Length: 490
Image: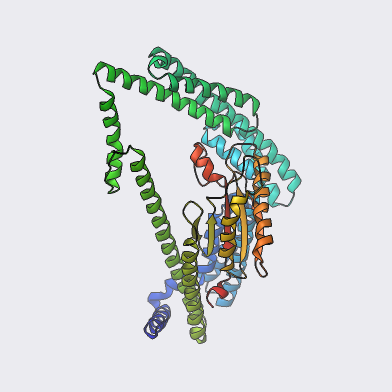
């Protein structure tokens, strides 16, 4: 840091400190004194601790309220600070308990989410209330430490939610689709759009069969039912469009030019000149590349904003400490500078890692101080956890990336799409993560780096499971690196 920058930070710190010692700054003293507790509260809330660890979270809230009461009554800073530290510990405990609960009860949580998404609450209100009671009870029982009983209640609630979802899906998609197919027959879709019409019929049959056979795996039949519904509507549209073409004597050339126009408009919005002398695919590829690039830039800018917010929070915390002990100015400023340098060095190293992967191999991004490497180029055969020889080159790049952060911790996360049973997907994702870990440990030569593997199954999708492209993105391995900040700043 330059001398000017160093003096600037000193001026900021002393100016804010001086302000807090005046009556006008009295209100801001509390915000800095309570900063860590409020941050811990928000962090726990962001992890849904109020839902998945309610007892612990409410206990922490009461402790925080006690600290606020002490502050309003003018108690000593030492007693308030001790209460706040206790609240921070309790919020952290609640957050940890919430994360454990979400992992242990992932199947139940997903079943409930899917049932809500299918609007199953209205199918049978009494059964819904029963499922909700078991859901709440499972969470409470797990938090109390009785895992076997909690899992038993979770199993009952999960089955109830799946039953309700199944009823809703049949009512929403199968009945609707049958009606649409009947409508398609009346408008002569079989004549004008025979392939699309046949596809709708076939998908409906597959959905009905899957709903019968895959009693506890709703995801695939639900997706098939939605596809059947779409193709039936698609067939009706195509029929009307082609009838109009025939009535207006439109040529095939008219048809192609008409359908090129929307793609030309999309390209223009991206400032791309659309030329169709080689067909539509080159234009589509260029638009897709533009979207990918824009998304990557947006992600990078968001990370920079998060870093700035983190720096501001760090500054506020340091100033809060200074207001309690004037003698700590130099050490507090040094600690602040160390953190800022560490964060900047992490950003530089992330850029270094990004340069080693093509966009088809991996996406590198940050979440707070943690770095993620999402391996787009790593794929497993269906139902398999065996690595392919062609993947070794990519995994060696990952090994090299991890070595950029010595003495950090690494978690290899396995994820699946929603097709297949929840329990089977959880096991499969863990096996795949362990396969990657085994390669890392065999070929990495790690000495001070801790490497763990965990499977999340289908519980953490990053894309829409209703499309083949989305499901492909969800079948993934994420490498999560928590760097050693001290070493990053060295």
